[in-house]
Length: 306
Ligand SMILES: NCc1[nH]cc(CCC(=O)O)c1CC(=O)O
Image (cartoon, helix red, strand yellow):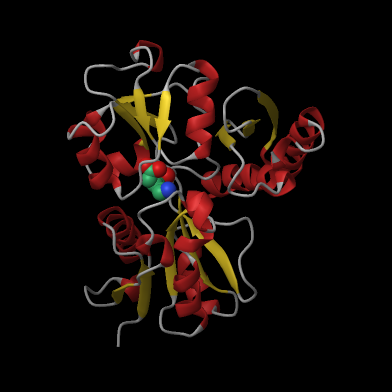
């Protein structure tokens, strides 16, 4: 049997990300260096099966991780590789996030043929996206745009746009880069489209009582990414956002200083409340919670539930 069983979704992006984790472990952990030491186990999730409606209607982003977490608790796999963006704010009892790979560029990309900027989309253009966060920020700047649901994996969405189903779509640069597709569009500045909390980060989850695996994962953990994601998730958990609420947040760490930006918005883009915080890296969690409380206060009662 392999020394370590790695569970992942089966999409091309998920398998690519699983490969990055396998390679990092093989490089950094002598016990996992042999070619057959790590077995990749593909697990189908509810989120993969639902392709016809927004995930916010189907029950949220936890749908991409539930079956994988059950496989881990059932000892059918030892670690799971996820996009941090798809992770709920808390892990089930017995599991924890033990490591992050170094974060990729967190920005979103506008894919609209020759058009490279949101401002240059033509009046009333049809943009396909299912993310409320992207919808709200688009409509905030361009209330004339028509936003329609577009789901499926990266290839499917690109194909639908090329077929003319929509004029434009938005995807995460991180995923496109990992698939070698970053030239399909242009990165959107963060002041126009703040990324999702966790976007661009790959996390590795394992059982809390699996000391050997935790030791192996510690060898590949990228501390600065962990710190930034901690700040973002602290903000998210204060906002207690359901997946029906547009929330965005991104932290960067430069010379020991964290800079966190966060926002909440109405799904129709009519209101958008943004804030930012700077502080020492040891204060990641406080900083995030503080930003979250400010957004809650400024939004007022009911902002996040409407
Ligand atoms: N919701 C799906 C998802 N989860 C993570 C990524 C991209 C990779 C990342 O953010 O690390 C994507 C696709 C997308 O939004 O373009």
